[in-house]
Length: 274
Image 1: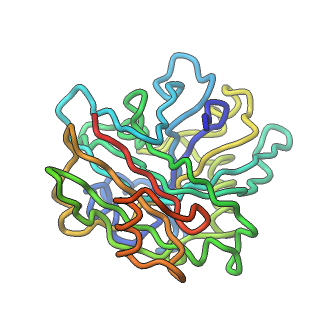
Image 2 (image 1 turned 60 degrees about the horizontal axis):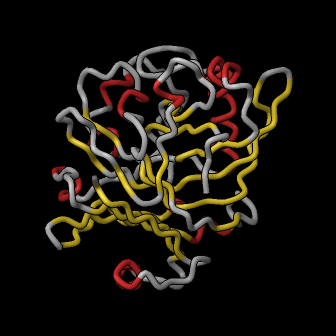
C-alpha cells in the first residue's frame, strides 16, 4: 500500500532510555516538558506537497532500506506505527482517529551536525519502513487490542540473527492512548521551531491539510548488541509487533524464517539493506 497522500510524523522520547542510548538526550535541552514522562517533541519524516523540501520525498518501503551515500552510522528504530484519519477545524488539527497499526522501522542516521530531528530521518526514497501487515484497531484505549501486543526487532548480518531491541510491551510506552493523541494534537497545532523541533502546523498548511497520517509512536531501548552495531549492505532489518498472549519470541523467529504466520497476531517488517 502506498501512503503518498498521508503525512508522516514521529514521537521523540516516548520510551525511557532510548534517547540516551542514541546519544540524543542533550539535543532536547531547550525543550520544556510538563512532567518527566512526557515525550520531548514530534518530528516530520514526510510531508506531501511541501515544495522544495527533502520532506516531500516519499521515504516509506516495506522491503528495503537504502543506506545514505555519506558514511553515517545507521540504526534500526523498532516502533509501532498508527494509521490515522485526521480532521481539522479552522486550519488546526481537531481529531486523530487511529484505524490500524503495524510494525515500523524509524530507521535513523547518526549525525552530530543535524539541527533538526527530521534531518536524521529522511535521506531519500526507501529510508523508512512500514509493514504491509496492518492490524485493525478496535479502540485505542486501555481495553483495546494494541494493549496485548509487544515489539521485537532483529538484525540479520552474515547469516546470523541478533536481537536488536529489547522486547517491549506496547503498554509500556510513556504516553499512549488518549493521552498520547491529545498531546500529539497539541504539538501539531502549537509546537514551535525551537532546537531540534519544527513548526508542524505550518507544514500541514503548506501540504494542503492531508486527511490521513502515519504516526510512529516511539523507539524502544536497544540491546547491548543493537546499541553498538549498525546496518551495512546485505543485512536485513526485522521488526515484529506481535500478540504476546499467543506468541513467544521463538514463535516470532520461526515466522521470520518461514514467512508463514497469522497476520491478525503478527505484523512483520523485513527489509533488505541496499
